[in-house]
Length: 148
Image (cartoon, rainbow, N blue to C red; front, side, top):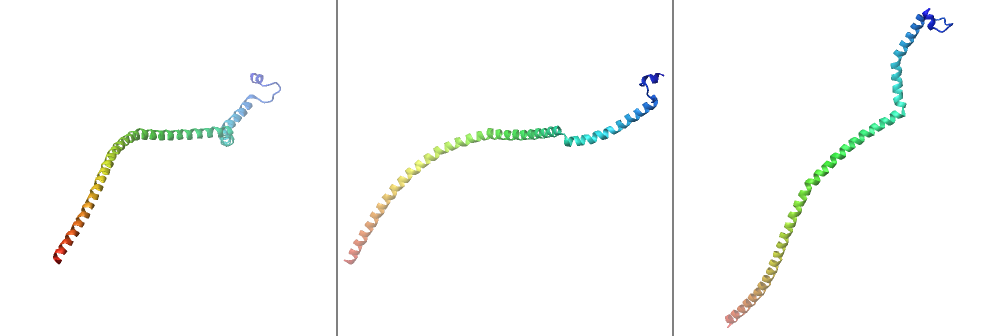
């Protein structure tokens, strides 16, 4: 009678039969739940727009992270180049300035030597012309002596 008190009045189902039916239903639902979840999960991933957005955002995050790493590497290379080449550049500028002074002095001495050589050349040309004239006169005098 205690079992019948739990059932609503006018019910023709006894408790053990109803318990077996509920247990069977519960077993079927529990057994079928993973299959239904797997099917709905696969379908839900393909059709769920929120999941698509989240996936795209995650892909963008990894891409931005990789680009950030590449940018950091390039920045470090550039900074290393700037640090190293700054000293090299300063040293080459100093050596070039020193060389400019040396070359200027060399050009001036070369110009002075050129002027001296031009003067020597003109004096030697006049000396040669005078020597040729003297030889011509001497030759003329010898020929007169020979003829006389």
